[in-house]
Image (cartoon, rainbow, N blue to C red; front, top):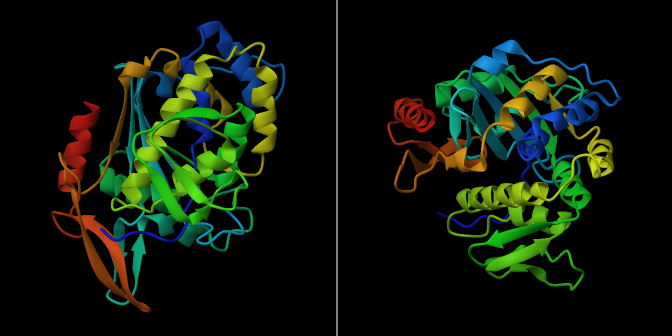
Length: 331
């Protein structure tokens, strides 16, 4: 697979942060979470009966945001499957180069679907159109996509800095000459294997880097490492005494995210996650790698030349093997 030189950001969903927070605290702390969600001392949030009794699927999408290359391409796409009866969380990453449509002269990859539906939307974070991307993800995964969330890269930076940094295990060396070292040395971004304590800027660089033979899947692995580190960090928080940190994070990310989940639904998801042990989390990615090679790389003609894409091994538009893999994964 070719090396990638274009720096691309990844977004760790506020929803996942809220769920992670809830999973490490006793049920009584959910009352405090209620205040966090509705921005008041009102703890009258109610459990959503449907979400509390049936599996729910959430599309979590992230882009770098204004001022960056490919600012509104959702290069982070995660389908979160939360099963309240099996007490299980499954996070399925969809690679950004997954081809969803082609007419011979132009093509659309999954990372362009959200922007294609919102390019003329002047209120992206106030009233995002999730319908098209939900439909495409449903076709690919075979799962109903009930809800969605969108974030820009400042969400990642604010969350990590607000928590005082993350202790992340780096499984293999990361060295990217296309990303500057955020420590001010004037060099390029470089991390040796082992445990590394990273601030928000360094975490953003870590999850932007695709300078490796595995490209997007190199980035996806970092995403999983950061989520695990985030969970470990939250274990050490006291929800009552550290509430000011969470409220500051909420303030910092205002205007940088949107979701069609309401507060009652978020509250319900948090209560479900409080019952899911971390041992019941599983990460997966739709990829071309063993032991489940579901995709293959290809090139496709566009109006500007040829573009790199990933397509199902079964053929363009044939998602049967992917759907069967996901069905087995969540059951």
